[in-house]
Length: 519
Ligand code: SF4
Ligand code: SF4
Image 1 (spheres, rainbow, N blue to C red):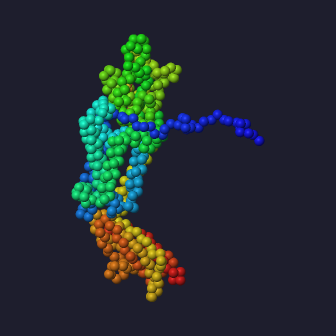
Image 2 (image 1 turned 90 degrees about the horizontal axis):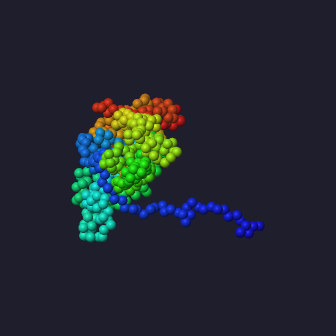
Image 3 (image 1 turned 135 degrees about the vertical axis):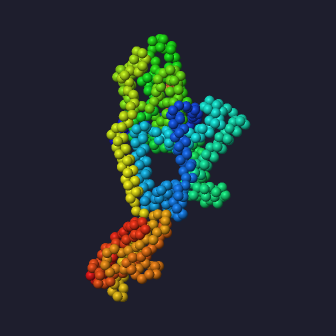
C-alpha cells in the first residue's frame, strides 16, 4: 500500500482556476461616440428614417375592407383571431403564412450576412436604430464627444442637472412613444389613442406601454452597446455565415502599417511608413467603442462609421480613401501576402505601391461579381422559392371552407322505420368581409337526406344558410339513410358548400356509419 507522498502529483492546472479566472462580465466603460459624417452616415440616417417611419406610422394607415371589417391596414386582431395586412387577411389556421415569412426573413438574413456581413446589425436592427436616435438626443442636449466627456467628468452643477434631466426625459418620451406605437398594431389606433389619454383603455395596454417604455429607455439609453455584446446571440451566430468572400468592415493594414504620427520624419530617415496616422478618428466615432485596427471583433456591428471617419482623414491628407473599407477576407489576405512578400517580412506598404506612389496592379480590389457565388445563389434560390410558394398559395387559397366532425358517440342511431341516422358538427367558414348565402348539399349517398338543427325546414339534400361576414358558422346536421340504401358499415359521401354568387365552392368527404347487421 502507498502512503500519500508516494502518489504521483501531476503538473496540471484548471484553465479557469481561481488564480487566473477572467470575469465573465467587464464593468462598462462609458463610450462617447463622436458624430460622423460621410456616405455611410447618410445611409444610416436614411435607414433610420425609413425604419422608424414604418414602425411609428404603419398603425395609422387605413385600408378599406368594407363595412364588416376593420379599416386599419396592418392589424393583429387578437380578440377575433385575425391578422390583417393590407389586402391580406390571415385566419388562425393560415398561420403558416406568417411562419413562411419568418423563414424568408431568416434566409434573407443568411443571404445578407454572407454577402455584406452584419449589415442587419449596423443599419436596421431596432437596437442600433434606437441607440442612434438616443444619441441624436444626447448630442443635441449635451454636445458632441468632447463636450459630453467634459460634462460627464465635471461636478454636478445646476446646468449639468438640467441637461441630464432633459436628456432622460426625452429618452423616456421616446420610450413611451415606442411602447405606444406597438400597442396600436393590436387595436384600432385612433380609438386606442383616445382611450389611452382618457384612461379608458384596457389595463394590459398601459402595462405594455410601461414595459416597453422601460425596456426601450434601458436598452437604448443606458445599456446601448452592452445589449449587442452580452445579450444578443447574433454576433456569435454570424461567424458561421461569413466566408472569405463576405464583405466586412476591414482595416487594411497592408497599406496602413506601420502606423505613425511622424510620417515625414520617418520617411526622411528612409523608413517605409503606412497610411495610418494614428489619429484615432475611427475609434472616436465607433458606437461600440472598439478599434477596428485590432482586426475583426465580435463587438463590431459593421456600421461603417469608422470608414467615414477615416475617409475624412485620408481626404485631408490627400491620400486614397479606403484605408478602412468594406473588403473580403480573400482580398485582404491576398494584399497582406503582397505587403509582406509572402509572409517573409512585416508589412511594408512600399510593396503594394509603384514607384510613383500608386497602388500596384497586383493589389486586389473588391468587385461586385464576388458577391455572386454558389452560396449566395443557394440562399437566393431558397428565398425566392419560399416566396413564390407563399404567393401562389395566397393567390389560390380558399375563402370558403367546410370542416366536418362526425359524432363519435353514438356513431349512428337506428330510427323506428329502420333507417339509420348519423350526426355531424359542420363548420362553415366565410373568410371574406361580406355576408354570404352558402348552399350546403349532400353529394353521393343516394336516398340520403339531411336536417339541420335550428332550421325549420323539412329534410332535404341541400339548404341555403346565411353566414355573417368573416365568421365561422357551426351547424348540427343529421343525415338519414333509408335501410334499403345501406350498402356497408362505412359509406363515404361529400358535404359540399357553394356560394352561388361568386361560384366559390368547397367540399368535405365524410363517412356514413351503419351497423354491420344492416348490410
Ligand atoms: S469598428 Fe467601425 S464598423 Fe465596427 S462598430 Fe465600430 S465604427 Fe462600426
Ligand atoms: S481614422 Fe484612419 S488614419 Fe486615423 S487612426 Fe483610424 S485608421 Fe488610422
